[in-house]
Length: 324
Image (cartoon, rainbow, N blue to C red; front, side, top):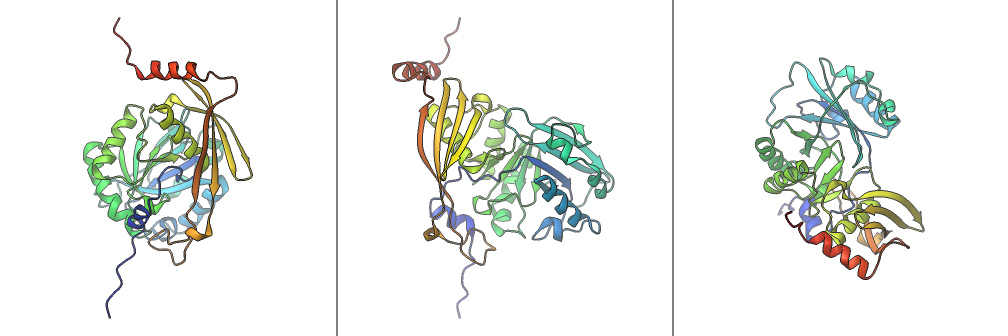
C-alpha cells in the first residue's frame, strides 16, 4: 500500500492563492520568556518549564488578553544563567517595550501585565526595539520549522542580537512567519533573503507590503484596510498612516485613516464561506472555512480634497524634492 504524502499547509495555502494581508493575530500585550527548548506542540503546556509555571502563564495570558511566548537564540544549545524576558504593548505609533533578565523563570509571575496594558509598566526596564521573532515551533506545525528555521538562521547572521526564534504566533500556513516587536508587525511567506530585507526596511521605519500580514493592534479587517490604502497611495513609512476611527455594521468594517493627503475611508467586508472549508494547518483534523476580507472601497473622507486636487497631491508626493 502506497503511503499518502504528508499534508503541508503552507504549499496548500499558496496553491489556492490565499493572500497574507489581514491575517495577523489581533493582540496588543506580549510577554516573551527565554527557554531554549524543546518546546513541544503547545509550548506553555509541553516545554520543560518549572513545575506549574506553564499553567500559571496560560492563566496570566487569559486574564490580560496577552500573548505569552517562549523564545531562544538561533543555534542555542542551552539556557544562559540569566533568562531574557521582554514585555511589550503593541502600537504602530506609540509602542511600549521593556526588558530584563531573571535567574528563575518563575519570577515572571511577579510582572504586572495589567499595568502595562493600562499605560504603566510591567516592572521591567524600558528597552529599545526592535526584536525580530521568527516562528520555528515545528512540533506545533511542521511548516513553521521547515520554512521558519532557514529565515531565523539567516537573520541570526544579518541581524545578530535582534533575532529570536519564537514559539507559535498563529497563521502556520503563512510560514515563514515573523512578528516584529514592539510594534506588533506580522510578516509571512518569508525566505532567508526576504526576511533580512524586511528587517532592513523596518530599521529604516518602512514596511514591506508584499509580505505584511498586518499590525497586531488592529482587527483583521482593519489590517486589510490599512494595507490596501498604503498600496493605493504608495505609502511605505510606518508613520504615514494613523487609524482615526473604526465602525462595524452587518459584517462591513469602515476604517478611517489620517494620511499625508488628508483623511481616507476604507470599507472591508468579512466573508466566511463554508464552501471554502479545508485544512488550515498541518496538524488539523477537520476542515475549516478560509476567512476572506473583501475590499469594497477606498475614498477620501467627505470634505477632503478630491478630483484634480487629489491628482496634484499624488504628483507632489511621487516627485522627488529638488535640491535647494
